[in-house]
Length: 115
Image 1: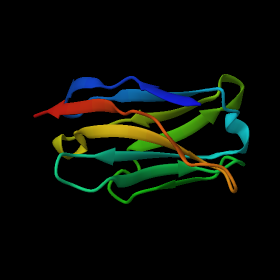
Image 2: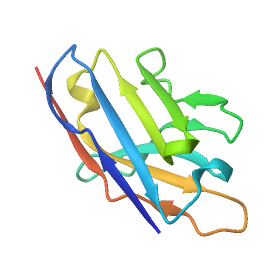
Image 3: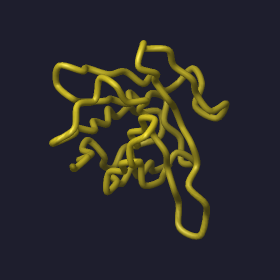
């Protein structure tokens, strides 16, 4: 099983990025999918979550700017990030959770927002 993130990079403040996380050897449709982020020296921070049925939740710090979505046919979860600011700079990772199964994490993708 492998989760592979992509879409990170360098963007100016106010810009947008779209992150993707694709699963290999894992069927996403039955998993709760989340995005987390982490900066050096800090704990991993939860960003957004999407349920099996498509309900979404967001951290207050990103609410109204970020949108999580899923495409089960492509085994992919997305994070659309708009109005980025310097505080959004972090390594972003996806997580897949299903009761009775191991928790799966991706390796992360770096997002850097310049002033």
